[in-house]
Structures are given as structure tokens and as C-alpha cells.
Length: 241
View 1 (cartoon, rainbow, N blue to C red):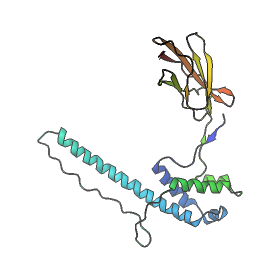
View 2 (view 1 turned 90 degrees about the vertical axis):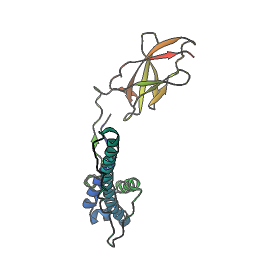
View 3 (view 1 turned 45 degrees about the horizontal axis):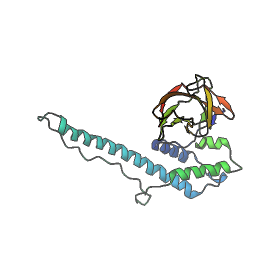
View 4 (view 1 turned 45 degrees about the vertical axis):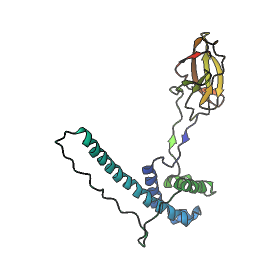
């Protein structure tokens, strides 16, 4: 399996704010012209940076105030009767972002979709240069390829209605995995190739009132070949119903 690139857009609010700050100070008129970027989109990203930064700062203040309230409330119950607490003061809120005319900015929604659309527009352009993408932050960091010497699935199981075991593997970044089973013979054999993270074992259950211990293991696939190492063997007790 080859190395891949991670998605460039951060998953957390603070990371998105930092990305917007970087974009807004890095984008140039020449790049805007080169990729035919809409002026409305550029204005939107500038506005989004200010609004998101304000909301992050506001939440930090609100979280601290909420924690103070919780501590005072819980202190009423747990502290000695001789203790006196001062009510929490109202928080000092940051000033909201405003337009040049003094009007408060509204919240710029659709940020994830807009950023993805702008990045896609640039990358579809015949003029696209990876160096431009790296400069602006729309090229994600390289993700090293999995090491076959240490890569192995973590196999779990859950008994579902009817008594059959459902085997589960976190499949990403692979597209498929093999389930192997030992159904009391002492020998493992491949049960099935799974294309999803969950696979229901269809092996016949014991007779009603009887039980058995089945053993399973799994291994990832890269294309049509096994990749990495087998998981630890997972014993599963099944009952006939």
C-alpha cells in the first residue's frame, strides 16, 4: 500500500480558524486571477475568519464561566457550613466583529462546503500548480504507508439476534479484510472476504441447548493479496437457539 495524503481541512474549530488566517494572509491578487476565484468567496473567507475567531474566544469565556458556576453550586452541597462563597461575576465578553460601518457581522454558515468547493475549483484548473496548493494549505500532509511488519486488525465480536456472531474490524485505510475461523476442528480456514467493517458469520450454530467456542482471526487485504499480520485470535462462545 502506497503513502497517501490526508485531507487538508482541519477537523477542529481552532484548526479551521488557523487555516483561514493562513489563507487570508497568503492569498494574492495574482493567485485569485490565476484560478478565477470569486471575490465574494474571498470576502466570505475573511468574514468567516473573524466570526469563527470570535465564537472560539466567546466559547472559551463561556466555558470558564460555566465551570465557575458549577464549582459554586457544588460548593453549596459539599463545603462546611462555615464557608461563604461569593457569587460568580458576569463574564467579560469579547467584542463581536463588525463591518466597517459598525454593524455586527452575522455568522457565515456553510464554511466546510465553501472551502472544499474553492479547493476543488483550484485543483481542477489546468493551471493548477501543487506548489500553489501547498502555499495556500489545500494540499494535505503525506500519510506514511502502513508497515506490513506491524499492521494488524483489531478484531471484535458481538452476538446478535439469532445467536450468530458479528465480527468487526476498523477497516480504514484498507478496502477489504479476510475473516478466518476455527469451528472446533483445530484448523483455521478462510470464512469470507469482507468489504465492510462488519461481517456476520454464517456458519451453522450448535444444536439448541448446546454451546461451542469458535475462534476467529483477521488480516487486511491490499488489492487481492493479504497485507500485514493476522490479528490476535478471538474466541467467541456461541449457543444454539
